[in-house]
Image (tube, helix red, strand yellow):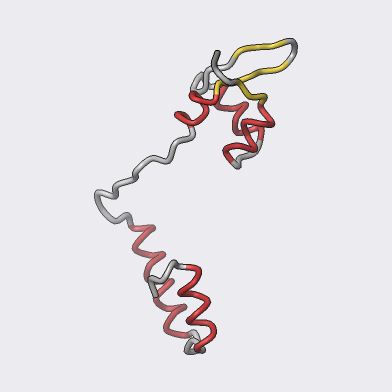
Length: 97
């Protein structure tokens, strides 16, 4: 028998607001069953609907280009990083910096 969760439990599992789960049910994206007066969703359906999707950019939009230019201006005006700040950023970024 499939494992089913209530909307609040499903939302907690996916770290989203309960209204997000409810909206996906109402939109027909997330299958659900009515048990008494509440909806329940199967864990497999929940994981499928909320699975991360790979996003591939085909070209830079003007908005993205403007955002990148703004970020470059902010970075240029910012004071240099201290050793402690650099180390904290390295931790946050998983050693990328």
